[in-house]
Image 1 (tube, helix red, strand yellow):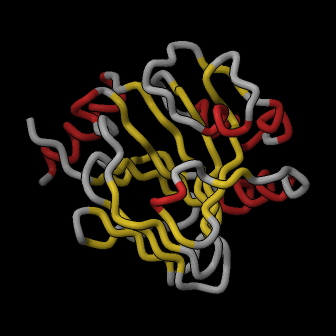
Image 2 (cartoon, rainbow, N blue to C red):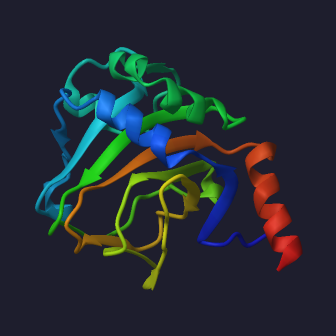
Amino acid sequence: MVFPDRLQLPPSFDPALLRRDLDALSATPWTAHYVQQNYEGDWSVIPLRCAAGETHPIRMIYADPTATTFVDTPMLAACPYFRAVIAAFACEVRGVRLMRLTPGSIIKTHTDLDLDIESGAARVHVPVVTNPDVEFLLNGSRVEMKAGQAWYLRLSDPHAVANRGADDRVHLVLDLQVNDWLTGFFDNALAEA
């Protein structure tokens, strides 16, 4: 079966409640993304769920493909709605991060190996704060994501992001272990196509 490179998933979330939880973390420091050659400007992260035993900020934001046990970070305790979003996914939720791209910043075209449903690892983006001038390109075509939507993106394919707006772009990013519940959304989408 050939899966699409993007799919808006049926769960949708309340943008005001997402923003409330983001605001609850206003005093929490953001950690610069560790792959600095992939971006210009400010691309930074707050870890909400990470590999067990990690305490260094860089290790907490790293999506370790070899990790088998994941734990919530202390930051997630202040975010009841983010916890509800995570619970809405009926599959193993591995790492969860808030990822911020400030105005004028860009993420250069790159690929993330093995981040595709075919390899068993799905990355889902839930925009918390966005603006119409954020350009997310996947395989050269734009993916328009609105606050509260949930999007699977096959990030093993080439993708890039530019925030040409005046406001931060913050996404809640979930790394999921693929199971029948998740692939069912793709089966339904392909059947309707």
